[in-house]
Length: 237
Length: 110
Image (tube, rainbow over all chains, first blue to last red; front, side, top):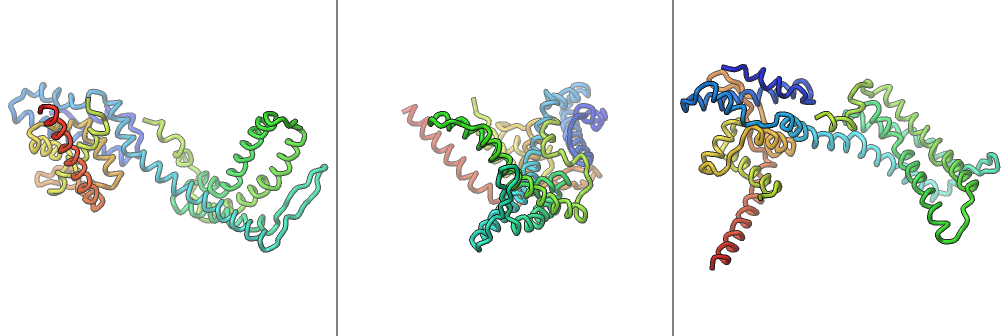
């Protein structure tokens, strides 16, 4: 009788699953092949033909490997991404916006600091709150099994979202303004980008990151290959 | 040609329906489906396991390792409460589809 475990192991050598999970899949498929083979022998099929017929159930082992990987990991990756990044990230962002709006309604105005002919806005009470919110995002991400990188990404999510918005807003503005007949002064755009970048992105980002780092000291997972799983797992079929 | 969505739907219905009668391991599950459909539905290993793993991820079925009387370890699949919930609307949808197709073919022959 052929060694079905060995046959399957050879054919599914590139299956990118956890070792335990991979071994389970191999054992299960080997058991299935073995039963198919035995059923054929009972029908008086010659041994060699039974082996071939059992193996013929799979015409493309690479394709099977890919489909098993997709079936086992696709949902898992999506759920992981949701719980470790999107939920803590959006929660941090939502709370930071609510807190900022509340402060404005309570009459806490931004402090304006002049620097090289530019006015930079600082919401000091808001900035003070951000390490706590960053810590919250990182904590929720860590609790959901997020790696150090993912937890830090979740903690600075509001600053990243704002950066992306700014980066998109300026090129769009530079396209729209000439269309509606206004001259674009690149110096003004650059100054605005710098001013808003410092006040709304750089300092809040640092404040959030401080909170995220603080949580990592106490609850963080060690930096490992899991840090890159969100982006890379789907490519290892 | 039958589309992949329809194929997947019938395959899922077949698996859930057979598991309604009790837990089965992969090979036995495929054999039972073949027997109960008089050979109309056949699952090879390549078709069966990716589907079982996908259904397991969706939590419609659950697989656990069990040792049979002859000492062999097999992964047995059983229907979960979510799978039971999924089965009844799926059965209704397919029954409706087949009735509609029957009406259509009868009308074409009339």
